[in-house]
Image (cartoon, rainbow, N blue to C red; front, side):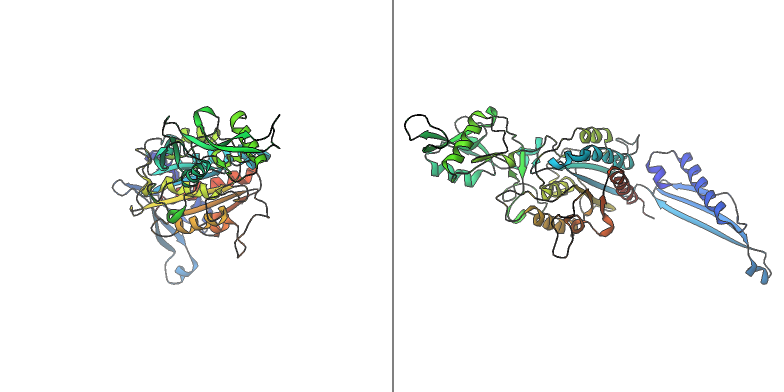
Length: 451
């Protein structure tokens, strides 16, 4: 009955549903059970839904002591809408999701989960359960939140290669702006041929530092990578010593002439859209267009977002975990828009849930990180599940191969991160994936029913 009420049924409809369900139980009980009318009441002050019934049943034992029947009463109470639940769905949009229609099947399953969590007719009415979404490949697209979560620096002209390399080493994880033009840029080098005649990648070159404005190339400018340092596995708000890494393209200042030549040509003439070419790589400057969706109860927007997802690149699962946490963390309240502010961790009757999905290994991490994706994910999951966060983590593996990396005791990262073994799900096909997401959504819905 509480679930029916959650789905928007009227009081009269819920009463009838409770009575129908209870009568069906009585009919199957047997033993000449005879029950009166089932009473159903609502307590508007507490949101309690109570049902009670009085029954009479003939028994052999009571006849021995002079009573033909046993009369007894049964009552039950459930409470709807006392739970405040912030949910983050974390979806893998790496390139392997394009195989075997995995991404399409995920879209269908996610839509079914949204239907369970946010019944039709509830948009804007019942905001006690809200859903957010984070996606990841080898990076995360911070979108409109890029400036709020990353640090910025303005740099004057580089006097030499060594000065450029020092700036690159110190500031490539920030939004770098050219002091003269005010434009955002990334580093590369241009060559001057030292040989006579026609020059090519096999010639000898002298190299000069160069900057390329994002305005002049097709490289994404809102991709971010993991946080490093003391706050790497916390949900601390972005700020000094806790900024998120800016995903600028990488340049290898120590590369050979041939590799520098290839990288220079890619940046200058190839559009710099290759993920890896010679001394140039934009692996961590490439992310899908799907930026985070803050907490909302607008099911139509959630479905539209999921149905627009595309996939490419590697699998930095730790990034997805981190951003799933950020979306439901009160520490990040100043980042998200009004209406998407996460509940405080100590909010009475509240719950935080992350649903992590992947189809493979966590195999991509930024060169500046001290640990790989797998180990970073372990650290994040440990922190998320501890007080005061107490995040409940569900994991979904979709056609994950047996060869994935495992912990020392033989667990996959999905088994390690799940709150307990019953929270770790595996799906071998689309039907199973659909069932998994429906089951997880149903369990989350039950969190809102007290007894």
